[in-house]
Image (cartoon, rainbow, N blue to C red; front, side, top):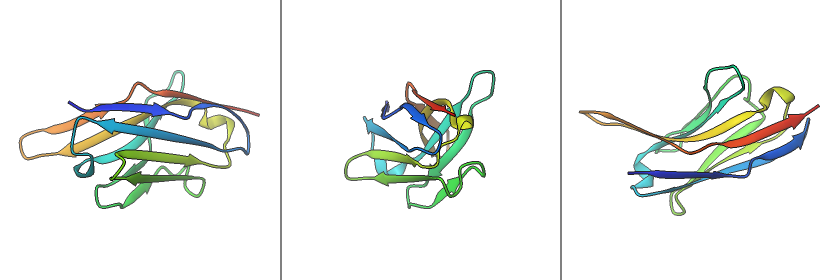
Length: 119
């Protein structure tokens, strides 16, 4: 079983910055792809950024150039640096650990952390 614990959410003004962190335990962290997803009220959960076990990254178009995802396999953490925040970035942000094996796919989620951006 994998446990994911997010931290770092809160309130920021438009144009400001926040850094989210996710600590993983209970697994071999380095073999999982990690990601950040978000869900705003009344909307579906969407991918924000992902980072593969090898370090390649992928971003939603809406956050490209503003957000940066990084991982530290020695510390079992994945971070999301969010700059130039916009009110539309307001959402609950979830950390995800993903791994596709031959017989099944593994997906684990954190409890979520609220990010609120005021205009």
